[in-house]
Amino acid sequence: MKLEIIPISEFKRIQNLDHDYYMELSVISDMCRANTLAMVKNAGSGHLGSSLSSMDIVVWLYYKELNILDVGLNNPNRDIYFSSKGHDVPGLYSVLFSLGILSEEQILKLRKIGGLDGHPDIGIKGIEANSGSLGMGISKGRGMAWAKRALNLKGDVFVMTGDGEFQEGQNFEALQACVHQNVTNLTVIMDHNKVQSDRPVEKILSLGDIETKIRSFGWHVIRINGHDLSELDTAFRDLKKVTDKPKFIIADTIKGKGVSFMEHPAALEKGNGLYPWHAGAPDDDSFTRAFNEITGWINDYLNSMGYSPLVTSDVDTLKKNSFYQTIFNALGEPVSSAAPLNTNLKKDAEYVVEEYGKELLNQGSLRQDLIVLDADLSSDCRLRYFENKYPERFIENGIAEQDMVSMAGGLAKMGFLPVVNSFASFLASRANEQIYNN
Image 1 (cartoon, rainbow, N blue to C red):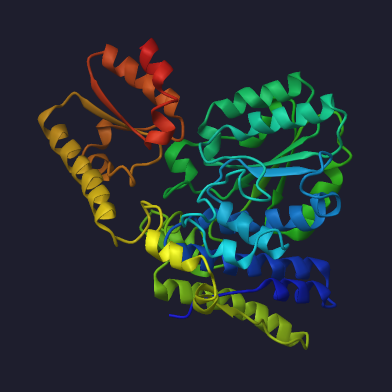
Image 2: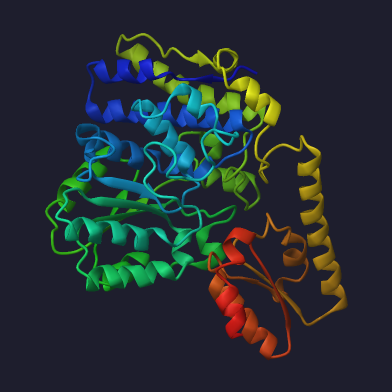
């Protein structure tokens, strides 16, 4: 399999061609999608679905809305953008690369020691906030926006959220606080792609009429097609006129956008109700198909306009020319739950979580009082065995760890044996107060 990326020289060339600027940004978005695929494939893990769904919005922000290219990344009057969900950072990296902020060498070190982190970290040039633990972004953005006003600084703050992320209650605390504190230089954009880790939001925990809910807090709310650049253009023009309220864009998007077999709902149907492209690297055949599909339509368009096709760079050649690659080959890369089973450590980790899921199922057959609670990680925590066998004793809480743990306290008070499940980074610290109180 040949692994390629689209070099920065091609992004510059596309921008210098004579064509409609909506089409120009559409091409740039898909070039970034192609590079995101290559980055995740090269890393062996990462998050594709939401990187692809939010890409058009992120490209529009950086190429048309944010002032950072004019004033500089360190100027206190700069606009600020960050993603609260965080796992869409491969897409953000690809946009930063297209603008010359990150280098080829950096994007080829995604999820490698000394390279780009799998979730945003402010140690990386162009990254404004650490994120990844969900539900915190609006609060963080409110602090930045409030500080700009207090310090008489120019520039607005833009925060991207997921839709499943709105199962975290802190978002609603932040919504009402923004209005009460009159933080009007903040815009939140929901990447409403309708799918969480591997199931639809509606199946995990429905958001209901989210547009009405957000508006009821006093926000100025608009809803758009997040892939229609003309709608994005109109939306941001209109929002500039709103100066008395914080702004919220619900952007309806498609998870996996740009690759037909990764797009929702087709991918969900093929996966028998489970979305297969949230996390993990595509296999060789899937990567080749996806990369060729994206670059194929771009080349068809360039050909129709009389322009030469895209020129790509071979990743293996770039690696061989990298001084650091010898070090990376020696040290390896961090273990990811989505990475191939290529180390003993990885196999041990997979064994532990697999055996945990099987033993939970076994205990369920022995104890009728055992209740399993999940926070949208049923597949990763191997709860599906129990969920499928005992659905009446399985409670899906969505991305709401604190709520889940205190519900478990209520269940325990009434005589049940509840078992709560999430990743340690999301559960151990957040739930401590809930556990103490219970």
